[in-house]
Image (cartoon, rainbow, N blue to C red; front, top):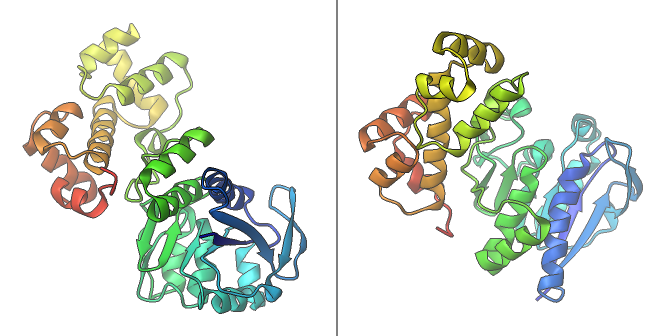
Length: 319
């Protein structure tokens, strides 16, 4: 059965919001011998400029007839102008009525919310505009942290490249994780990014160090959570005294070495909880947190949730 994927764009849309999911479904169409057909539509149709100046050809949205299997709305910094004009929202609401599922990338969530499709649902969007979404639409439960959220037949995702994660999750739901993994490999992207994974990894929270030795040390910490990451060991690796190393690291990353290491290990533990079935003792050991008790305390401190609750809420179905 061929599944029809309609991506809705508008002048000033974010090109990757469209291109990422389109390539996921387009690649899947090749693997499944035409299992998906991707269409692009916009109010008025014709040549539609993206925010970066690239122009795409789109069908007139008002002439698109349902049913649509997957209705996906892209985001872009001009989305508020489009909402104010009204026609885009009305057309999305019309097509959503016959769609098997509805999705948005980035601040395309504003279009879904304006159409009433997110009322009393949990949703996410780009972290930069999450507060604005929550303030404007009081009936929407906005969670700014996850990469994507599924609530019933409505899916929302965070900014830009998280649209690829969303599309891979939709593909896995349709055809299983084996096909999604094959498509991810073909696109050379990392498949294991469950929806519950945060938009912010530890390196994204920190400043980018100016010096190459500190950048290399930062990468070493993130890649080796179970190693000896004490200040003494890190200072020796950097070839500095402990006092000088602590000062330089804090100055260049915005976090003390100890705080950075704890956050990095917490991220490692969260990934293990999401994509493995390892016992908590194993997760604690492999993430460098040592014991289940420490794992529990770190999770409560950073996310106000227990490791077990996090796993139940966000564990990848593939694991």
